[in-house]
Every structure is written in structure tokens, then in C-alpha cells.
Amino acid sequence: MRALILWFAFFATLLIPILLLVLFPPWWPIAIGVMALSHALVLWPTLRPNSQWLGPVITAFESTSNEVWLTIDDGPTDDTASLLDALDARGVKATFFVKGSLCVEHPDRIRLILARGHAVANHSQTHPSSAFWCLPPAAIARQVAECNAALTTITGQTPHLFRAPVGMKNPFVHPTLFRRNMTLVGWSVRGFDSFGDDVERVVQRIVPRAGNGSIIVMHQGRGFSVACISRVVDELKARGYSFVIPGFDRLKTNR
Ligand SMILES: [Zn+2]
Image 1: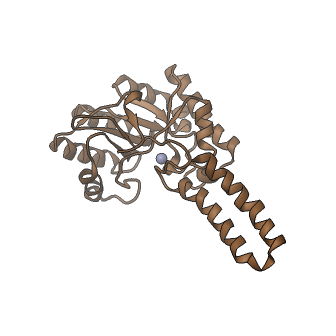
Image 2: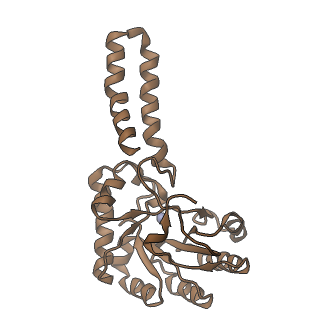
Image 3: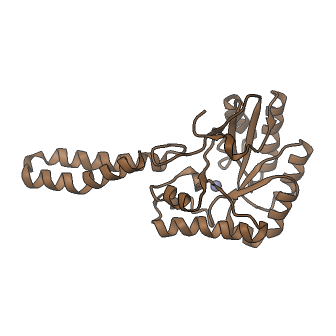
């Protein structure tokens, strides 16, 4: 699918419009239409989180019981220790998708996360939220490689999972990950908890949409993050869900 889109984009952006304009000048609206379509075919899967058009994105995991996978992005921020206490108090394990630059500043926090039984994964080096979708190949590779290096130095293990900042991935992300034997992880359910500070709204967005094998994405580092994650966990536990970190062989691209 990715190759098909890119080949079409190449021809539709350059060759087809030029040929049309040269051979059939009055057909210029068609040339512009073809160009617009080619751009849309690349932009849509780039900007749309969890779109599989440019390559596989993990959006769920295999489960036969009431299990969810809690993933926490954007750390390791100052609230890491209190967040770990809150998770411990609830007997919950999670995966932390972390920023490499914060890992370099606070390697102790990564060690603490692992010592408490959680997992860590790559969420880019500097988390360029507004620019990641349009970074060129070398910059994408740097974002992935530098975070990997930071985590490898601290943990002795190279991460195999990557989550793109705000879930946006352009056509250069999958080849970068493929070369490093890495997998792109999206989510099943999100609560937009990186905006606003209304805990109950986040709970209402996440809890009714969660199901067996759901990947839940939340964020740390905001004033209400620990309270918000705790509330969501409590609500899901009250509905009978347990929290697991699924093995690689359980990850899948559809719910
Ligand atoms: Zn993020």
C-alpha cells in the first residue's frame, strides 16, 4: 500500500499533470485535481493516527480475557516517582514511551521505572510535536536513533517499539523503523489528557471505549496526570479489567 501511494504520488504530482498540460492544455483543471489527490493520499495517512496506509501500526493486542495495556507517553517527567507509587498501589504495570532528551537528563527515572516492573519504549528524542510529520528522512532517523541510544546506554537493551509524536508518521518513518527492526505502536483508545485538565472528561472518553486487548494511551508531566491516570485505572479495574504488558507476538494491527 505504501509503495502504491508513493508511486502514484510521484507520477500524479509530476508526470501526469505535466503531460496533461503539454498535450491537452484545456484539461488543466484535471491536472490540478490529480495533483490534489496525490497530496491527499500522502497527507491523510501521515496526519491520521493509526492509519495503516503507509505501513503497519499496532492498535491492539491479542487477548481472550479482560485485559488492557496502559501506555504512558512523554516522560520521564518530574511526576515519575509519584506516578510509579500510584501504579504500585493499584498493582498495575505499564509501558512508558519516553523522550530521549529527558532520559539523558534523568537516567535515574528510567532505572526506577524498570526496577518497579514496567517497560520503556522510544517516543523520539525531542518530541517535535508540530514538525515530526514533515521531517525529512535524516531527521526522522536521528529522532529514533538518538532516543534508542539514550535508552540503550541506561538499560543495556535497545528498544523495539516506537510511538510517533502525536501519532503522526510520514512515509519516511516505516523504512527508518524497519532498518532498526522496530515496530510502530499506536493505540486503541485515547483520552486527550494532554489537553485541558478535566479528569472526568478523560475518564468518559477512555473507559466506555476500552475493550479486551485495548491499548490505552495517556500522558505524564501535567499537573493532573497522576490523578487522571489513577482515576482511569480505578474505573477500568472496577469494570473487571486487568493491566498487562503484552509480548510482541500478541501485538496486532486491528481490533
Ligand atoms: Zn507524546
